[in-house]
Image (tube, rainbow, N blue to C red; front, side, top):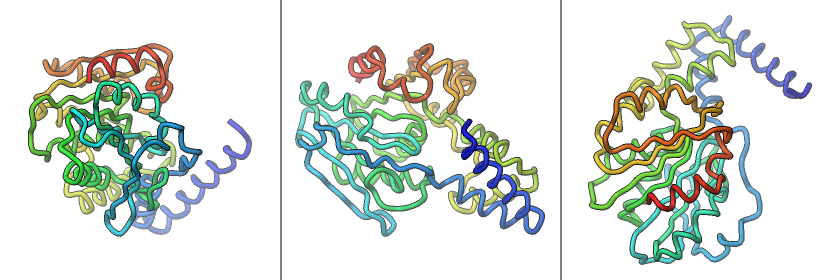
Amino acid sequence: MKLAQQLAIGYIRTKFKFLSSISKKKAAQQAFTLFCTPMRRNRKPLPPIFEEATRHQFTLHGKLVKGWQWNKGGVKRLLIIHGFESSVTNFDRYVRPFLRKGYEVLAFDAPAHGRSEGKNITAPLYKEMILAINKQFGPVHSFLAHSFGGLAVCLALEEMPPISNRKLALVAPATETTTAIDSFFRFLRLDGDVRHLFDELIIQKGGHPPAWYSLRRILKKINFPVLWLHDRDDDTTPLSDAEQAAAENPEHVLFVITDGLGHRRIYRDNKVTKAIIDFL
């Protein structure tokens, strides 16, 4: 770790330790804001395939959500959904193969990501975006989702009207929100009292406790084919959570475990790309 990163982490931990000593409620509120705030935003030049798309935008809670559409009116619709601190532009390798198969392809940056507006993102907000896209451009038949986007799309699918021939490809999905929060609190070195207040904030804002935001729970309500790819070396969404989901033997879910690809390289891997395209 570089010295600048060590200093930044030290500053954040010291700040929250001091804030917690003054007001645990304020520490929980600021921790929640930090948890929902991407530190990086992908605004790299658009890949060439994105220059061929029709651009769209719509307003969600006062912020513009921006995206792209290819081959309007295709035989089926695919929606690409990115992860935290990412952008759909990272998934350019998937667009052309689906266009060759006659698909309509949709890809939107989540609030606070890529070229969309906003500073914060939550699972309920991301879910709302996906539902809005399905309502305005759908129905969507196929979904490709990575990381945090995997949780968001599953939350949305709980509320979508069912259609035939629907499929979902999950790549290193955020499986258990409690795991992500546990890791976040270990990073900040905050105590259990602040955690309790943090969890209460999640209930106030979304109507459910952190454990409710769980793929294991949602998969029991989904009855269409799901492909779940996860890497043994994933240091962001741990394989152990995926293994717990697999241990429940959901018949409609195909689990594929890869080696040495980590959390982000996995969706750029040629074999993984082919597996996703073939499945969808």
